[in-house]
Length: 414
Image (cartoon, rainbow, N blue to C red):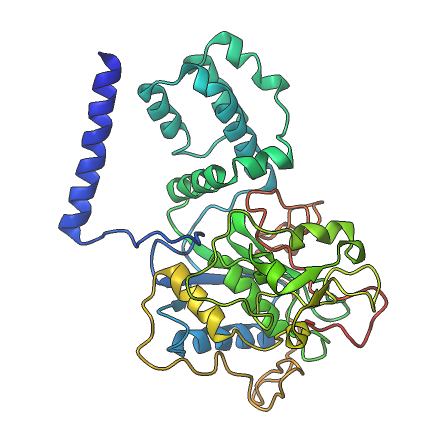
C-alpha cells in the first residue's frame, strides 16, 4: 500500500509541474542527442572572465562572441557578461565524491529499491553533497550490511564509469541544476602570455569552464581564437569529429604513432550521436590534425582516405559545425542560405592565426583580476594538472593543442 501511495504521489507531482509549465509558457527546450550544460535552459549564455587576463584577451573573446551572436548561420545564441551573480563551482574532490556515491548507489541500491527510497535519494542530491551527509543518509535509509560497504568502496574504474556514463552525466546535470541555479560559462586564463609557453586548452565539463593555458598574445605561434571557438563548441556538447562512429570511412587512425596519454582522444565515442545531416568533415573546427598527440613529428596520428582531409581548419567553424551547434541548442535552420562561417579577423590571412584588431595592441599584462588567484581559479585545482580532470565527460576534449615536442615554428592547430 505504501508503494502505491508513493507512485501516486510521484505521478501527481510530475503532472502539477507540467501543468505549471503550460500555464506559464515556460516549457523546457526539446532535448537533443547532444546534451550539455547550456542546451536546455536558455539561448542567453552568461559568461565571466577569471585568471590572468589582459586587455587583448578581453577584446578578442568579446569580439568572437559578438561575431557568433551576429552570424545568422550560427543559430540563436546571445552572450552576456555577468560579473555579479553568485554560483557554485565544484572542486575536483567534490566531483570525484559525486562519482563515487553515484557508482555505489548504482551497484547496491537495486537490492532494496522502493519508490520512496528513490525519492529520498533524489532529495539527497538536491543539495550539496558531502561525506558526512552521505554517511548520515546511509545510516538512516540503507540496511546496515550495505552501509558497512561504503568505507571500503573505492573510486570506480574508468571502465565502470564508461558503462554508466549516460546515467551519470544526466544525474550530474540534474544535481548542478539544483545546487547552482545560475549557469555561468567561466572563461579562465591560467597564466599570462608573457614568458609562458602555450600548453593547450580544455573545456571542464563539470565546472562549466573553458580553460586556456595562457591569455592571448599576437606573439603566440598558435591560433588562439580558433582554439577558443573549439572549446566553446565543447561547452555546447559538440564532441570531436574524429571520434564519430563513422570516422573509419574517412581516416585510418595509426595508434602506434599516438602518445599513450592522447589515445583516449582518438577513441570512438559510443555515447555521441552524429548530428542529423552533418557530413564528416576533416576541416571541421572540431577535428584534430594529423600532428595532434603524436610521438614523433613526421609520423601522423592518422591517414586520410582523401587528401583534403589532412588539412586542419585553423580559422572558423564550417557550415556543418554551425548546423551541429544549432541542433545542440535547439535552434531552427536559418532562413538565409548558409554562407561562410565565422569570419577571420580583419587583416589576418587564413592559416596565419588571428591577431588583435588594429585599434588594440597586445596590451600590457594586467596580471590577476582583483580577488582571483590563478592557482585556485576555476578549472585548475591546486596541485592538479590540467589533464587530471575526473572522467565525468570522457568524450569532452582535454585539448592540448600543442603539436609536438621540440617545435618552435609549427605550434599552431594542424
